Length: 512
Ligand SMILES: Nc1ncnc2c1ncn2[C@@H]1O[C@H](COP(=O)(O)OP(=O)(O)OP(=O)(O)O)[C@@H](O)[C@H]1O
Ligand SMILES: [Mg+2]
Image (tube, rainbow, N blue to C red; front, top):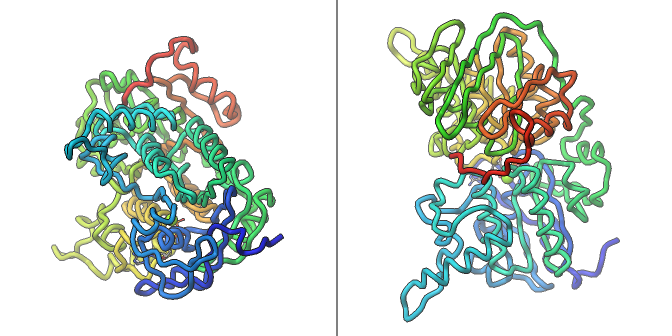
């Protein structure tokens, strides 16, 4: 099966990289052939992002070699990588929110005329690129307003514009919807036909046989297996987490108690309208729908992060003042936001501080902050969620993507929020850790908490919810009990919208 080395476009041997307290890469071997899509698979913190950062010039390895076209190279900077034909789409976007889409696409290489920025040429080129990936955005739009899925598509457009021979994609599908994933896979298939080699990282195992040729599995910084992409899922899971997972969605239903969260006629003009539902103690209610349907916006309004124009949010019988995060938190509402970098975490603070963000005010003894208690609580929850870190003092910025997400969830688990609103909670989380989070959700509902779960991962919504609400175009399109909530039934509601019309093909409006 192994081809001669000269057939490889890229070869990595014995790569090592240590960070304070962690050996992120511990002798990784990895080869890439032209025209193949090579999937990197591994648990959160296994070393995937670190590996690709050594290829893109973001990290210098401590030991080991990198060869391109059979010749050893040193990749010290992003420019070195670019010269070698390596382009990278990072897990954390590298886009500048204050600049326009076109400026981001051509950052550092804007077309010039007579020494001046040729904005017209730049915008025209940007328009072509955006059309190529099929993203609805204007070159003059500011990045900040685009939302996470379209930002990802811009990041992809940017990497494509470099005409690379090696394209590295670190979890590009984590924030994309089904339609966008299909489009991306179409692009990747075309590139592969042109002989471009792709390194593809994903936690969505069902994507692997669709898009991949080979899979390299990383575990604790070591490459432990190289297998074909059609390897059965169970086998991939076993290679990755070292055990098999029998039950992907271990929902344990509890008898529903009184309504803890009631939403009545909630409206933000032009964003969502007349949304009413309730979540009872002990329930997990799923909120499904297409991106842009208004789910995140409803979640934010419940939490008080945005002020609704009309309607009411009632928690445990008490009406909340609109647009008041403090009041919502006091009343026991927690929100795990979809954008963990922007809203969920203080990146420069450490794990313990982040876990204690909500509880900080509470854990005082006689007016003094109870630091020992805080540390014990943080340690316990980090252990439960299996956060991979060098210690509670590690800066959250340097945690792996999935481990950052665990910290966001842990923060609210520690706060013991009665009503927990989870917006894409398992984004970027590996298959093993997902099950652990689902089990924690079971524990919460068993003790009378209420959970509202937004997720674009439909199997997850169906597998974990007791009832599923479906939103379409800013309205509730319907409700399905768990027994009737099939993929088809949910999609039918999500696409058709309230009243079931489906014809009305309005512009996919900008819901920010
Ligand atoms: N700059 C850094 N400083 C300190 N530790 C780091 C740094 N970057 C990564 N690490 C550590 O290296 C290990 C590997 O992280 P990496 O980001 O490569 O994981 P990953 O496989 O990409 O995980 P995920 O699936 O969660 O994205 C982790 O323990 C992480 O905390
Ligand atoms: Mg990563």
